Image (cartoon, rainbow, N blue to C red; front, side, top):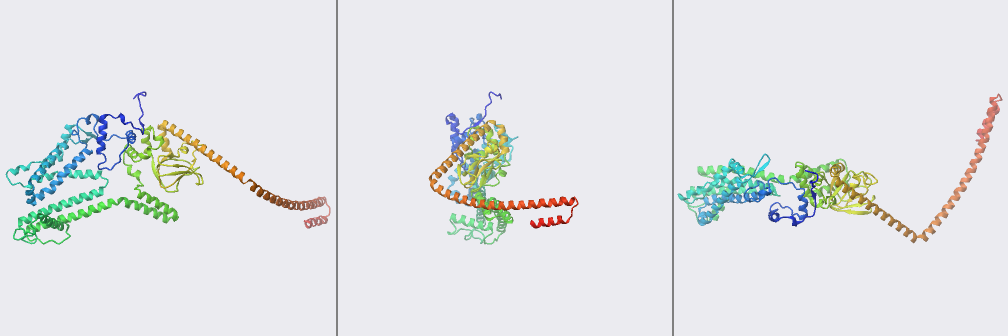
Length: 620
């Protein structure tokens, strides 16, 4: 790209809706209708959309601009919402067949009372099955990492998969046999082969839902109820073939016929369902079997019941474990910290601060290892996710109001979240500045060195620490102010090396940050000078008001000090006079001793010299 034609993408927080075309506006309205039906996401304003559109990564699987105008049935994204909703419709048809076919086979009176309604529902489900074959032939697939959208390729790929043979077997029109035999729902049992689409829907829903453990429990209950339902229907069919009331194991009756007490349809199904539940769960007493067929059925039911019980225990235990996995992991970390503090005899007040910090993390659902969770994602996707998560805070930061998209993407990857407790100092004046901070949530105060005066309050979107990191002040890389957390404050920390690495690639942003830092320094100097002048004025005013009283007290103190100094002066003069007399006597004795020593060396008598020495020492 030529230098004259190159343009840099800018991130702006203002969006002009008049620039959208009619097709784009219609597409936006359609997305608003379908958005967050099951995801529980947030709705973005136009300004937020404009901000996100600059850094958003194009999603794999979306149609190109030319392909979206061909038609909605030309291509189905395997990970899109359109195919997901269609799987929901197919799943409803599959669940209907799994419950209704065996029920109508076991209890013919249900089929006879509403025959027309059942026929309409059956063939409507057949239409859904046939349409699903068409949808499957238009569903894209990945080949060499590229989503294939060509119709011929998609159809050829579908025909060579096992899903095609299962779908074809599920729509074989065995209903033609109705021409020769009585209408029997059991002929349509091949519709249950479509169950693989229901399993795919469950997998897709489990990956999309915000409550996967609850969904797994609901799915498990559905399979258990279907199994008990089928076993109950089979029990009633066997009882009818053997004869109602022929023994204690079969459905109650008299000589193969039903009594008035057991004749109602509701009683038949509830009794059969009750027997099936007791047999499969093995938690109750049931009548013993008598015939070989009864023994075989009971044996098979017990075997299935053992597997069912193991499945229930295993799945429910796994669900409970997964549901409490986060809490258990968090509690283990907290217990380790408590044991560490007890071993090292940490003061009790400091232990309480640490425990309250962990409590805040848990109550606000904050994960202490967010970086580890997102580390497996690609950098671009992780940057987009971080921008979405921290959108509210990033939009308020002044340096992000009109910056390049690449700068923002590079910066969010280097931000490290930190949490500060009430009263914690983020930094103190005079410390070496190695990090820059951005306020994500909470309030902080810019205070004096003693912490008694508050100069400013920082809220979400504010940032500080860039002055010492960039060495803009006269103190060099030292902090120019102390910052203290008011409550629990969540901050983004950006190290000096990471910041300089990003700013070297974007000199315009660096110039902008330096200009803002200089303006802040000037404001701080101006505020400091105003505070000093106000303090000087207050001092002069206080002195003027208390001048007579201060003078009287000062004069009394000065007179007392002068008298004390006079007394000390007289004492010092007396001691000085005594010392002078003593030094003069010692000097005379020393001269006398020296004269005697000089005479002794010339050969004089020694006796006088010794006398002179004794005389001198006595004088001393």
